[in-house]
Length: 215
Image (cartoon, rainbow, N blue to C red; front, side, top):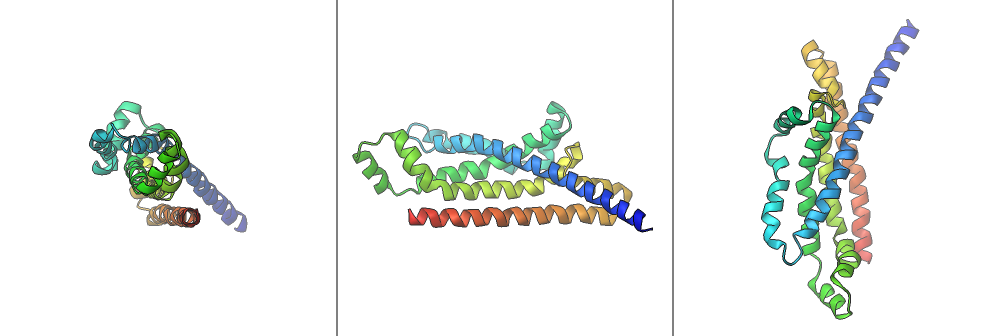
């Protein structure tokens, strides 16, 4: 009896661990790719000569926020097929806006007097961007990354509907079987991961704010 119970526990633990790894993989890859695309885009719309394109870039980045995530999955499932690739693309699209917006906001909030002083010292635009604007703007930029990552924790659960795995697997498996506990496990694990990630990234953000204030 004890052996059977232990075996059931091991299977359950293995399923949870495997789903957790899949869920984290979806979040980390999609958010990482979003950072790689959104930070340069956010910088671009703060540069002289490109400000006129800010509406266009923000409009494209807003697609993920304005269109329901399940609709994005459905559309690109027909193009990219089922599996993690489609889920990662949808999550990438969903994470763009907060990162682009916060990158631009953070840079624009840098004190103009600091920029003027740096220019007077002979620093080039590139040096000012890399050595002054980005370091000072990074706490605001990181807040956007934090928002994107936490949003993607919940959205990634929908990836299970197209075979991408993750904690959503428990939900879509439990619904047709009318297994309320399985559905609850998937929902609770997703919520716990979102809260945990928000807490960890919040602690990092607090440290960044303190470091920037001291600088």
